[in-house]
Image (cartoon, rainbow, N blue to C red):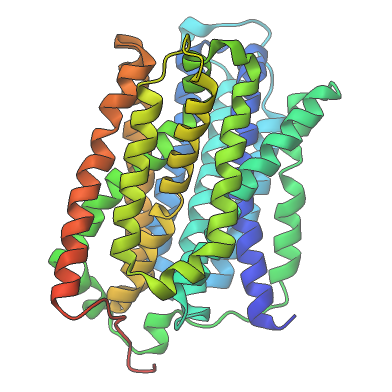
Length: 417
């Protein structure tokens, strides 16, 4: 395995950690809340620190990565994970519950918040380093390799879910479940420690900071930045609620509804890892995004019209989950690939602005989806949510048509290419 392959493997492991900790965090919410005397509102506020941290990490990374260097930041992400996990595990448990006293009423809840915040920052730094690193290592094959990189996101969801479930079956506490995340963190730190990182694509092409900043004002980038909010909300907001959504739609399944999330994560992994290269050799990225939006729309609409009493309810649920799982697969990495291919002078900054937009979108969308499910039934909420991929279908189709009118999709090359 050469140095490029090792760097790519370390990037994949890093992405796997970001989603693995998401799965395990979701699994340990209730025992953490019980130990620290936090009600649902306070534990929700504690978890929100992760999203703020992620956004902060990825945006700051975009601003300083060319100065500090990708290797230093990659190592820093591992230290952030280990430090955050240590803070959470060492947070002193209060003698008595005090949910009315606020989040920072005790030292334990304060340290807990800071620990989760630090893991969120580490997640953002991972995304902020690995996207420009892979775009630099494979600048002639960005679309395929960015999809392979982000195939490790659903892989981490599966690994984290299975680890948490298995440890729970063995009666192991939430502390050990969280500590398991340290294993792949140490693995990627050991892998990257002896390696040399190249300068980012923008730096190696001698693109100035002024030229990089000018890319943020281009109309197409501003449109894609806005669309990233919609694609991320379409993909990740239902994902985070998926177990509850399926439990509401098919109560007879009980706790087995989590298997639908594992199933859609498996679809994403296979398609990103093995099908993306074949598809992008034959289709424009805008064509793939258009089809993705249509499939997501069909999946959400199918689930939104599901009737638990119908004889075909199980089959319809599987069909809806499959359509949605396939549809959402290509949103995030394809948006990043288009950004890198159409605005290479924007470098890591533009990639990380897109990632930051996606995560901010999820922060906003999660409580909105929850409110929609509270104020109406879950099926109605899904039908309302399907408006997002409906809008995306139209906009991406127009972009696809305009690109064809101009002679097809072309990758913009920097001078060193």
